[in-house]
Image (cartoon, rainbow, N blue to C red; front, top):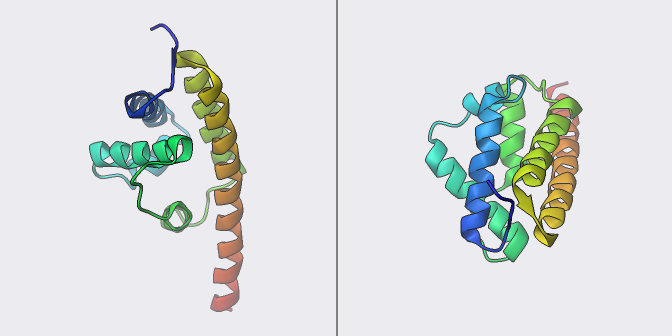
Length: 135
């Protein structure tokens, strides 16, 4: 496939589809996704909305990524760590670099980096709050 620019929702949907194909084949990350996602078609559409919002500011995305990731972390006994976020980000960059080109690739890499850091820190801060209320 020739590299293409990310210019519209169709391109974002292609990116999301390619990325989650990689996720589902990744031995380290796939258990977290396969254990929580019952309907992949709905999930991919939801994440396409999210990334369109991040890139084009017109998504229709409704949700709370922080809360969702706290639930995933709790479901897996709070064993998610920086290595999971690093692996997720490396796959995101790999899919972008392999398949896409242009300014929006850089923007999406930067947004993903900030998002991974923010979610990671939010999870840890909520673990501390959970521990304090359980004592």
